[in-house]
Length: 481
Image (cartoon, rainbow, N blue to C red; front, side, top):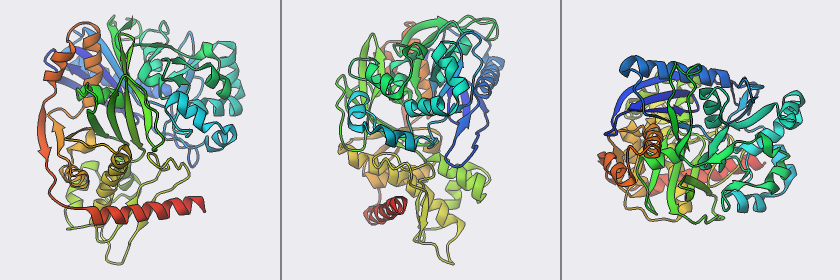
């Protein structure tokens, strides 16, 4: 069995995957979200580690400890600081959704050059500006980074530090490519950008392959187990790998907290000025495979907002039935820019808007408008990609929503393929780890991913999409006012 740890934005999922690629056990533990002020989103790294241990223990209780390797996948741009020796965090991690660094980025005035090097636009989304903010606003914490007492890293790096009791400080190329400090063309940290953001090289992790053994779990830190850590990838890249989109042109959309669309573009990094990101998909045997990506910040998070703040549903799974209580959206259009607008707009100051409310608006109309908004945002990204797809693979929790998947097929006029196992992120981490210890080869992995459901286009939603574009324009105008 392979142990796959998927440290997401709201919780940690752990899977046990057998040699046939089947999930034989699953654990899950949420951890708290911290919002100290508007626009700020933070995580306590120790709470993430505690959630990891709980979810792993749930799996061990089901299937025992016979694991051949560990694969790790994670929320990406979130960045933290911890003691190099003890692994104790020095401050809360700043989450990818956090918007506090808008002013810091405006001061840099280096956008085109940064994007040329990293494939990423200047935006609070990425890690570098978050570290610069800590340096300017938490001098005690940053002094330990400068002195070498503390290190910085993304969540994969933190988990590996914990798993190895501080012995290993690494990240893979896919996670490194999300920091805005990594030169995707040379496959190394950029001296120019480290100087621009004023971050010491010595604090950063060593960049390694996404597949291959990088260390062993320390028995004293991890249930008495010494297991090779053999797979690492950012969550969306792991999902692309788990969906076996190994060929140029292969694409997937993960419907999670956000919606993330990645398309394999091969071994050349073609940085484009179309609102999309160019990123490292994975690095295997020192060979980088790249992807174009469109990042939608709020997808499933919009459903969580309906559940937790508006309280019009009690469980996220209820939204489909509620949306089906009405035949259409009743004229309601929702732009869920609750943490700004991501691709292809990149407007961090945008805020969510709802148009078309009347006295006759029901909960079902807002529920349906929310599902449509998720699908509209995905169409925005594919329009920017200007690509023709024969099919689109989907995964993530919200991909289980049949109404959403049908709306997506209708909007893209493309068949939507949903695999038997929609936890492609964890599956991808397991595949990378199994590949790293020789359990599988690439051709064997292709055979493990099977499609269970196909949603064929059945309706024309051009008019609805046009209304959405007008709503987005109004939202942007309000943000710029």
